[in-house]
Image (cartoon, rainbow, N blue to C red; front, side):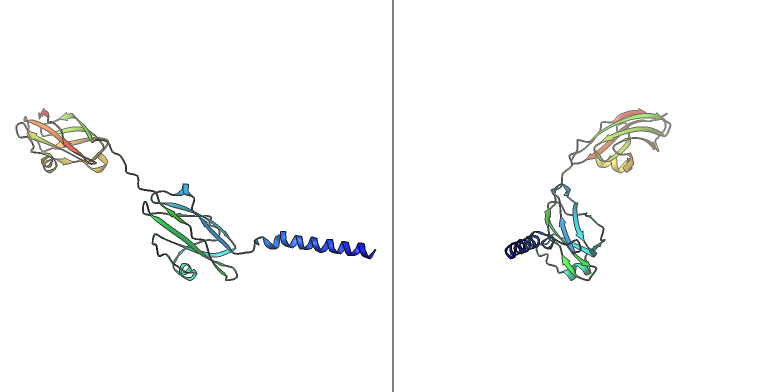
Length: 232
C-alpha cells in the first residue's frame, strides 16, 4: 500500500511541475503593461503613414517620430515632449511627411501603478513622390455676342496654368504673349480649364479687330492666331 501511495505522490508532483512549465505562469498576464507599434507597408504613402498601436493597461502614452539618424530619446523625453494618445487608440496617422525619407517612431507609456515602458521603434520609408503628367495646353474661342464697344467670348481651355485674351485693331498685331497678358484680360483661376464666358469691353464702334489668346501650361505655352470681328 505504501508503494502505491509513493507512486501516486510522484505522479502528482510531476503533474504540478508540468502545469508550472506549460501553464499561465509563463504567459503574459492580462494585467501587464504592454505597448507595441507596427507600420504596415501598405499604409505608407509619399507623405503619410499609419501606425498600428497594440497596448494594454496604459493610463497615458506619448509618441515621437523623426527622420534623423541620431534619434535617441528617453522615456521621460517622450512623455514630456511627445504627442499624447489615449488608452483606447489603436492607430496613429502621421501626415506631412517628406517623400522618399526614412523615419523611426517610438512610444512611451505609463501604467495605472506609475510604471513606465518604452515601445519598440519600427522604421519605415515613405514612397517617392509621384510626378503628375500633364498634357499639352489647348484653347478654343468663340465670339458669342458683338456690341458697339464690347464682345462676349466663350473660352474653353485645358491643361492650362494661366490664360489671357486681348483684342487688337486690324493691322496692329501683338508682338508676343506678353502683349496679350499686358493689354488684355487674364482669366480668373475658376475660369481656367473649363468653359467661361468673358465680356471684353472698351472697344471702338464700327472697328475691325482681331481677338487673340495666350495660354501657359505645365512646361509649354503659345498664343493663338487672331480671330477677326467687327464691332457694331
